[in-house]
Image 1: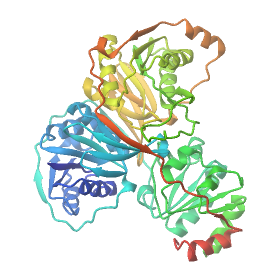
Image 2: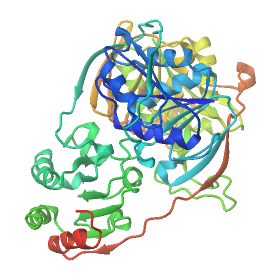
Image 3: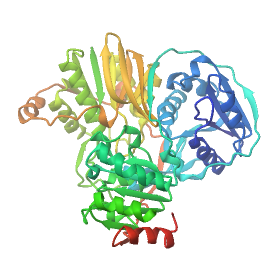
Image 4: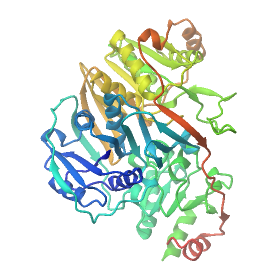
Length: 310
Length: 249
């Protein structure tokens, strides 16, 4: 049976996590269809049609899909689910929001945030903040699955799928979006960045967080991340948070500055290729996972590091 | 207005879990158990809504083994009025829990079900959304701020790009994120008082819910461990190693 992947998009382009999810679908095997629900979303649909491995893009274009509310989106997915053996979406805050609703309405279990595909009905997923890895077999006729983006390569964008329009479902009118405050940044997205500079409580204040870490991130072309402690202290907004309940990242280089390394933080970054830790406490747990540890006062180390990078 | 708060008994967040030697499951023998931290935030928020004169009753509910009573008592020590235990030794998966909660919602008729956004054991992040789907109610997940006025909740949600605010008519399911509040510590007098609060026990069969697991755990393993690398002397040493050894910059 075919696999339905729900595209995440902003009506003009598709989000990178969709590409990783398509790769997970190719591991299952079978024809892959992308479902895209939006409003005036032709540009996003065109981008979706270029995703390699996808044979068909199903587009539902209606005013009540503009914000992709979980109630309306789940109802649309459920109405189109019967011919599919698998329904996949990225394990982003959007996918995590609507997919369990899809699963419940189909009366099937959801397998959350898979990190590998063993077979068409068996998947691998981290539990206990990534301290344990479980292999899970589903007995349900339709497998509803969310996918951890960092665990799968991005699919190519040289495909040419057919675009078909899908009739929109009803507007359930259950929730209304009244505003979004999105963090504006010229930097790469955290979950897709090759280099991440991340700060913790040790940064001391929002001012020093920005003053010391931004030049370093700029120099390295890096995204900025943070520990929960730094977000709770108000140094940076919530969307900077890396960890069990924040963003899961796996860049080539992760530089943790003034982060002690609680297991909840390690859960979000321990799959990074190279980890650098800068902390004045030589006993900090972050050093147990760091490839390169530098024990020292970050207020002295960071300027020196910037100077060394020229 | 009645608020229902589901609470889960999980391995304490400070415990480093181990896998059983036969790889069948996580070893839970003699491990400290606590209320799921996100559920504690949900209980706190519900109690604050009651203290603020918006809610009239906070009912906490837990499904699982008999010891879940302790979790319910903890929630009542924070300020919940009464507890419901759905007792079973069967492994409960999110869909089954959502069905149990649906059965209780039909009986209790709450205006708000306030869940933790995810449990820190299975990290599933499903139950609240599933319940909302089964009830055909709106959902407002990952809440960092909740304002209830009349028959509507205005909820600020933590999303990947920042924050968004949505308005949902009640009844609705809301799920709590980390920054919704900081739960209070239960005082000794409140812990004593909680022991006398009503706690009703029921079971899945009495609620007419089939809780047979749909997912089978084939095996559990520990992920490959990262080993500590080396300490570098200073910034110059670090940059040199990143360039020539790790070749990542």
